[in-house]
Length: 474
Image (tube, rainbow, N blue to C red; front, side):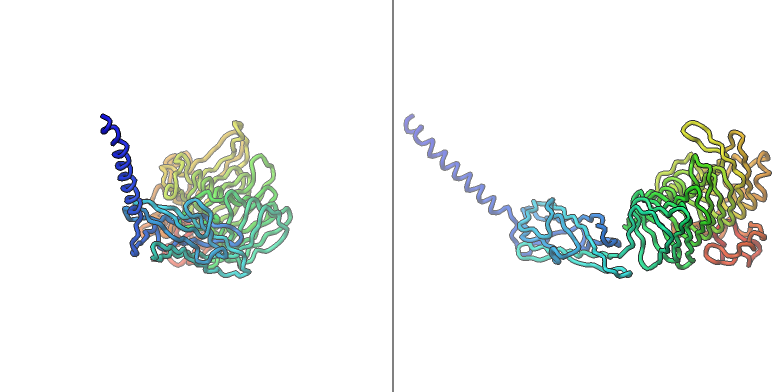
């Protein structure tokens, strides 16, 4: 017994030594040490869309994979341009442009987040920016390219403007509310691009004059230029013409991806505002493409389309539409409230729970299209004692509710529920295809008043003008 007891510590010591030796051996073997070490990456190039000077970019992500069954030690991760580079890194949760001895466990990965900040250059042309991230593993060197375009902008933040002109030399980037003051005029030159940040708006107390052209339109859109944001509505607030604003004119303007494209007038106001708009596209809004309250509007060769509420809402006022396309296919981009259609005209609006009457003196549509993905694309609201006067003359209309004798005096020469065969190519436009029911159905007198369509095609050269903003050419 004594001998057996005396030997136990010896056995225990030997066993412990054996375990420690085994652990040490395992630790020595758990790192991949081959000179052919090769990391795998989620991309070989990290690209940024146009980055505005003085404004940081969205964050891009790069994933770095260890494909081996052993731990891989990356001896160095570094931004080639160092701290002077406009690119900035966050490596595995650490803000640094270089890091040493970064371990990646077997079949695991680490994240690298990349941003870019571009200083103003004073150059109107886009600036191509590039750098790379260098990885060194067991003496093996790999690199990932970083590329971006930088763009100088005119930056405006929460300002009230006096009379001025915005040229097309550089884009304009708007933050918060930019207001054109009473009795002042903002003129925008053809070819100008206006980007608006999230929830930002352009509000007009005075006058807005924006005259683009077919090849150099004026564009209003959100400031997220990544491809994924091409068709995302609600990226900015809208353009608001406030009561008292007058002599506004828009020609060859594209307004897209906001909340409300254009709002004319304001609830609870007895003052009006007016706008003439032609050859323009207002599309893909998370509320209304056009909302008018007690206002005055003349629209020629315009597209009002794709909104979560109505593409066009007219609540009291005085309105004329010539050769315009009103269409709601909002579900192509995002979820649509299918209880709403394309056009809502009424002589009232709701103030909380109370009805406010506002006379609709005129809402006339000539040679136009009102269509969409609903069964019925028109809602006409008539409550109280307010005036309600409207007319559809030589129009293509999608509606079951108003296609009857009760409303015949309001719909003359109407083509009901016939598919206009929109091409949808490219997405933001609604041109007519070969078999469109809108072909040659327009009133020739109206066609001669406005002979050129939204693409400057002459609509008077065949047997009749096509309905809507676009003339079909075979």
